[in-house]
Length: 245
Ligand code: SF4
Ligand code: SF4
Ligand code: FES
Image 1 (cartoon, protein in one colour):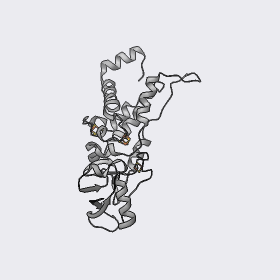
Image 2 (image 1 turned 90 degrees about the horizontal axis):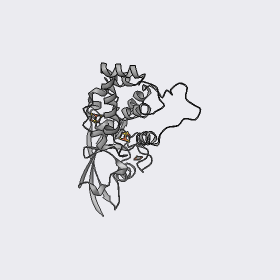
Image 3 (image 1 turned 120 degrees about the vertical axis):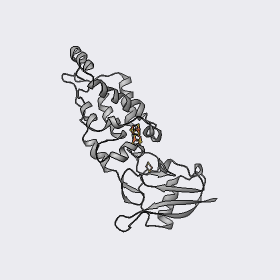
Image 4 (image 1 turned 45 degrees about the horizontal axis):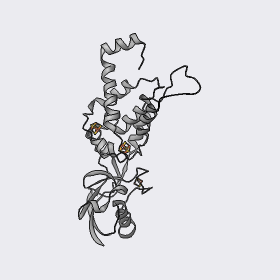
């Protein structure tokens, strides 16, 4: 058994003037993930440490943090893959509730604003669509709402209070937009929600624990729709062809 040092971010907004780091030493066992060590610390060494977790199986999305500066799930990050000192911080894109726990409610507030699925008029009782359309949406529905993509996005981090809904909410919009039986036009919504400020760095895609191709399969196609929508020639051709979306 080896010992590793865990440097953990601490801050209680009701008590502390400034955030600080506290170090803990833990005996590391084979197969241990970062969340195992943090739970051990919070239960056996320092019960004042706040941490949020639920499934310990990379399914609930609640144990998101920045581990050695990278947005990751604590329950999916093996201690053996990291150095002798492991630094754990909360997601910096969100307000701190306490220590490693952040307030991610802004993501749900933005999600409420997305224009909802609106079926085309006159559809038959049984809806049919091609398998390829089903699979396209299924990829986005794998999202576990860990918000690591939001945390990694520099546009969201710097401007979330002003405009950008972030990659998570772009894929949520894309689920409706790419549905072949939907009739809603969400381009105006995406335009005022800051999609144009995304500069396709793919950082969001790189950190997604579900390997959703956020940039390639949702952001870039949505940006193309937005550009087309603004193109007067495209508008004219669409009108002539009777296409409303
Ligand atoms: S690709 Fe766009 S949404 Fe994703 S991290 Fe970069 S700027 Fe943010
Ligand atoms: S898209 Fe990926 S990184 Fe973003 S919230 Fe969903 S699962 Fe997490
Ligand atoms: S505890 Fe559920 S995703 Fe980590």
